[in-house]
Length: 442
Ligand SMILES: *Cc1c(COP(=O)(O)O)cnc(C)c1O
Image 1 (spheres, rainbow, N blue to C red):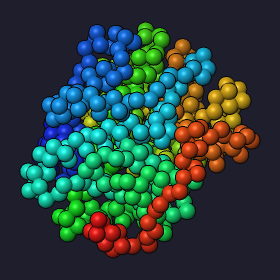
Image 2: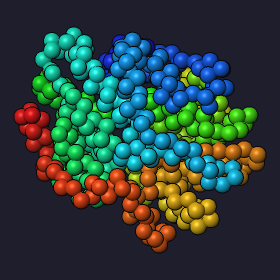
Image 3: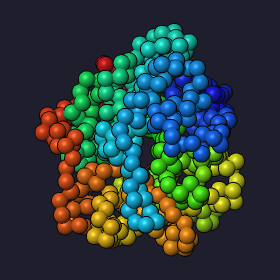
């Protein structure tokens, strides 16, 4: 598979290069040059497929021969080695629980797939030999996190040979659970507690990528959902949901809590490849640039607004351009399959409580946004049924949930285990030169 840049100012590249670079040199996002089509028998027989076989079949066209079959199968096995159950909540609504991975975040799947592909390519060394005369024997993944992404990246890359990970987070501004997830791995994972806010962290990372002297000496890459190796495997969620969907004659409406729009974009990709879906809803919090765009046709990003579903506090979602590309940049075509709504913090809180009291389902704030968007849609579309994606375990947002439900959120054993471990983080000022120094000395 070749990938072209959506800005069309850089040449197409293969999967290996797209994975190592993340973003194209012209700053465009990479996009597959053709969308593979599932044969109809695959879709009608989906229930009978083993999840790993299914995942190998779906992902294979995107990777081709660039990873040998045996290694590829192992990568896929390690990517989805936890359950992804579809759980009924009401008679018309089910939830796809994406939080049973190692860090209880849906980003585990993308992070694990990407890390293992990157590890494979560093070891094979083809791209590095051709482009850097083998000057680099390893690659450094540099990320800034406001809390949730960092843990999935740390866990995904832990002990992957040839890959060093440096994670910047704002000191004192992430929850205790999140900080433990960032700082207790050690080995090839280095956490840096920056004396500043998330924007400072992101600014330092941007400066590092723009620093030609540094990038000559250190092969740097990022690990966010603009990377095709993180974005593409997320389509597996939707196929695994449809595999468990009972009423195949009536395809589901799917509601996705959305921030950077990578997850929902992967779902739309699965649909365009041939998986039946009635309608997609991008459920947003107060950060409503896409709901406003769908109303007016004008794309007007504002500043990010802090909310209680903070993993979706994104002002200018990177992956929306990929969604448009999937509909050949046609807004009417997009609007026939896709809508987007904004849900306030107050509505999120009352939904959390109602879900818990009436349906005995404890959602996290992101899932509650997805649930309410779906419930509203189904009220206006009698006879339809749907799925909302539950993107994080409630314990990760206990500080939001406990005051709403007036009860403690139970702590799962995987989290309890790391709460008592000692963590280590380098402490740095929010100053680029200290980061540069640090990276050059490694
Ligand atoms: C990242 C994240 C989202 C948003 O996903 P996108 O792919 O960026 O739209 C939603 N919920 C949680 C819990 C997240 O961590």
